[in-house]
Length: 274
Image 1: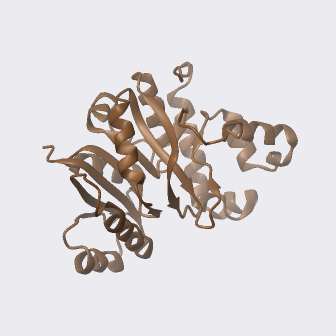
Image 2: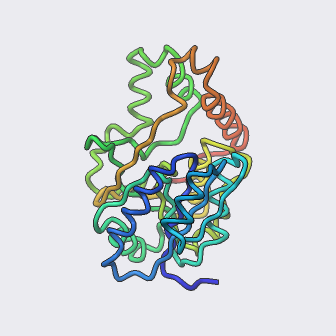
């Protein structure tokens, strides 16, 4: 039942301090906005500190804890199921809102109903730009980003293509896919496309979802006229190639998800981006 204009749905994982900052930024920057909104939080592998935070500091917010680590997709799909908003802003708990970001995004999405996913510019806390819009993966993209080959000039050119280094990030633009840490969608568009694919436990689910929006004729748009801060620890990149393969399970999640993605779309042409 839709009873709100907007749902801000936060997905968290063992980060109560960042979640607190995220929630405070919502309270601060949405207070004067003329938007009827709600906030809900899903949390994977929920710890006691997070439960105490939600119970004692934010008791008015609907909270959906998971005892096990259920992965990103399960949290997003739970948010989509529980949201009462006509529009849903899906954000990670390490996102910090800025003034006017949400109202401007919502107005832009309302004015362009052919957009399926809209995402703001994402900034590091030191003020540098964080890559968050990309071209679709090719198998070599994974190889170049995960091995020593990435140091060669031909691989760097490919990675620049993948990260859209040729795009100045100043004007809104349709892109292949957007990082799942901050996505504004409409209830109507999600009904056409479906929820995130549960085959992806972690990584590639945002790539897959954006591709499915394109397949339904809905644009995926990067909107740099507003920005949010994103902590983004880049856990799967830690330890170097050999170290990450041996010891970092996040790297294995990424590789496994990439294999699932390429298998799912084997022999299928890329959707038209335009």
